[in-house]
Image 1 (tube, rainbow, N blue to C red):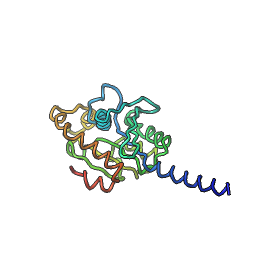
Image 2 (image 1 turned 120 degrees about the horizontal axis):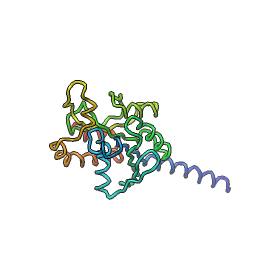
Image 3 (image 1 turned 45 degrees about the vertical axis):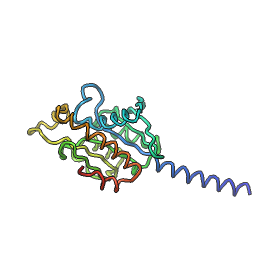
Image 4 (image 1 turned 90 degrees about the vertical axis):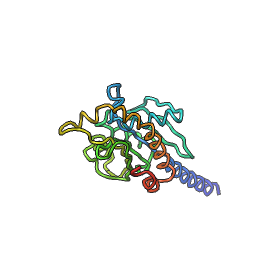
Length: 209
């Protein structure tokens, strides 16, 4: 009798653990550490997470391979991560935190800049190629899959031939900074929707907006 009760308890505990894991998410905002890069286009991932932390009164703590904060929202636990590995090694931090927190890859959202989208346009996709983005390339290499969600924030392509690196590592213009007042809150809403409504509903709501 005792063994039967014990088996039922363990089965229920396992079920609850699996359900809890599906309510955990990792949102990794990509960027480069240090004041030199703080206000650059390539750091939009950091910028969105910093804005979310400010609005929700969250604090980032420096931990292994990045700065992290825990965001509780409507029964979900969302780990916000700003890798400190520099952009080209972002995958190392993402893989570590997925494994540490036992978060399934389908609950990963990566925030990155995209020169193929006009400034401020946001696009959510459940998978895709790295598109020449070194941070996404490393994540794909570390996870051995391109089947993870990415939140692309358009930074435009106002640069001449051979000037792409200078452009993405350049700072926002005053006009872009002003427009951020409207765009950043949309970024927060997208993250919240991803964790609660799922990727399909979130894409339908936010893509191209």
